[in-house]
Length: 325
Image (tube, rainbow, N blue to C red; front, side, top):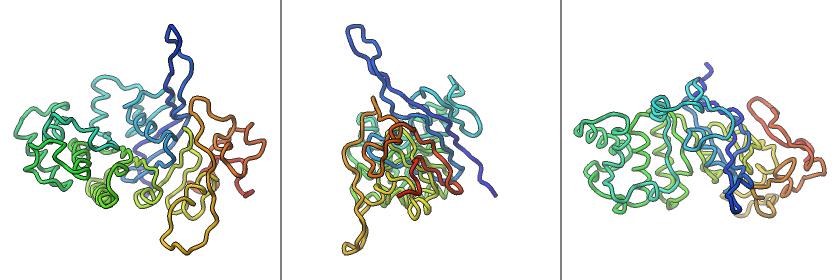
């Protein structure tokens, strides 16, 4: 039986204007996300991977309207949410939450963690203090925090505990969809696996749907059902988890996979190093945006902007030279 599509993104675009001059007129745009489309089925995890500056976080925040989209549409539970306002938008946000990358910067240092976790309940109309406290204690136990710590402040917790507080805050309203914005990148390696396992347990327990954003392909492989590879605001490849790792099509995906360490240090493999830095999103290259760093680029790559084409069931890539290298 085909799973229901919970989140559908169509031609999503987010530009950040740059102002300058004496009269502060708009002089350019940062093209953070440029015309991307994807869908996430209920109960599944869509992994979004790419280098820093590729637009992953902006895509995630725009999907749940923490940023207003410049263009495009987002459908959540079949309803277009890009035009929602007021009470309708507030109701949508109850079902769509986010776990932030920085577990300390996203927590108010002046408020006890019990109030931080319980604040969404207050915002959404729960007024009884005892009810809030009980629900906060329950959710703290679920994420592995001791309920008696609810009067403590954020600085009294370790990095892993702070991220658990952030997860508890996202869960308190029983959401259907959570954007996980690089939730382990700021944590010690020893703690990362604990948080990954916790997110998977919560997904199984509450049938959660994740948009999981990361730059570590090993983590994305462990978490995701479908993976989208982003480069400079564009999706360059989308494929089911196993297929992306066994049969990558785009040269950028090849290079990312080649950078993942392998367990056997003596194993030989061809090195595919990406040369240079990611270009500026203010003035991206013409045609294929990866061409300035691609070892397979030809003249036509500067003239043709490759669309995301289907090469097999649910496997898409944006490159005019697929099959030639």
